Length: 260
Ligand code: ADP
Ligand code: MG
Image 1 (spheres, protein in one colour):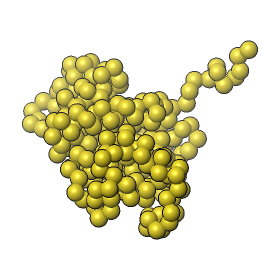
Image 2 (image 1 turned 30 degrees about the vertical axis):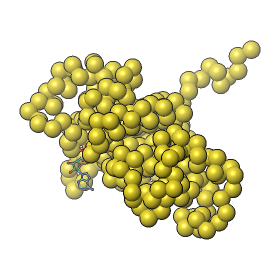
Image 3 (image 1 turned 30 degrees about the horizontal axis):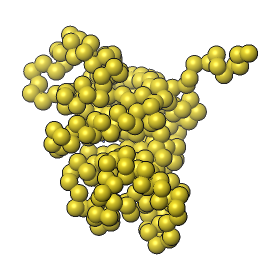
């Protein structure tokens, strides 16, 4: 017997429709529509000023759209929620500069981010239970920092801090991870390992990565969909090879030294 839910398509984890956003008369986001399946790892590229970061700001509630809808998990209209409510839904963001507690250990940073922990500092003074410990050790393994658990976060290399921050999103139980230019400032080796980390999280989490490092994009986007933003709208979407050879995309990047 086929039950009704099996006939329905899986809902999008994120569906933005007709989104517009202006800043003092400058239209940063223009009739933007964007759909993403649960578990997708989606790379978003586009020249500097295309609206990529603003798009993330709109998802996290940092800024509100002028018009349009942004639906999460087919249930939650994000444009009607505040930043904290959106965070509580399981939408986590990693900024370009790591925001870890440098004077606390790697372990403590993860502990403070654990879902259900009783506030940032209270969690440091309460006893850590076995379940929390197991969870933190799982995350440490995932982010390749098991050996650095007792290190002060401030002593980590740049790349390791970024992985810790991704680990903090995992500790928060984020279902949708928003990652803005993770490869910036990383060595090639760190960049590659970041790619491996994001690939290992895909499927279990939905992830939007904004990037412009083409080697990195080819690593994480192989066999997946890439979205090109330009002047606040989707210019084109498709496989990384198709996007790279798309005439409109080439035109948009032409004459620019740095394709951000
Ligand atoms: P990208 O991340 O693709 O480089 P942004 O989303 O940062 O682009 O910016 C898109 C455009 O919107 C830019 O021209 C930027 O100057 C403008 N913008 C973004 N945020 C604001 C803001 N808070 N106030 C005014 N202008 C803004
Ligand atoms: Mg940006």
